[in-house]
Image (tube, rainbow, N blue to C red; front, side, top):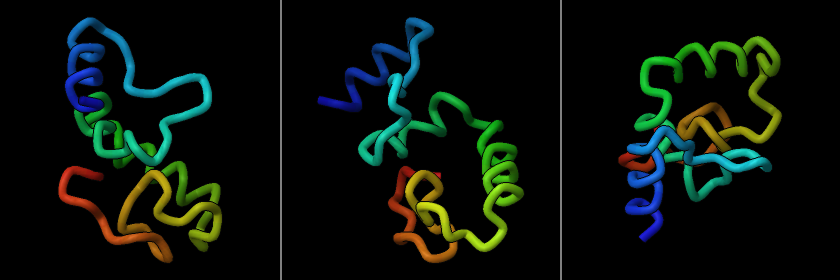
Length: 74
């Protein structure tokens, strides 16, 4: 159901995020919304957190110290 709602929202110019950020349940939808911008976002994260200690894997799955990357996650 969540994927259907996100797809509906993105098709109408909306976002998968909310005022409190993306939330772990929606990280897989980042590619749909931001696509080519994700490497840039990860680069900024790495500049601010070169040791990967701030919420590792929370948004960018597979990041050092984080959880393994799910199929649809970045």
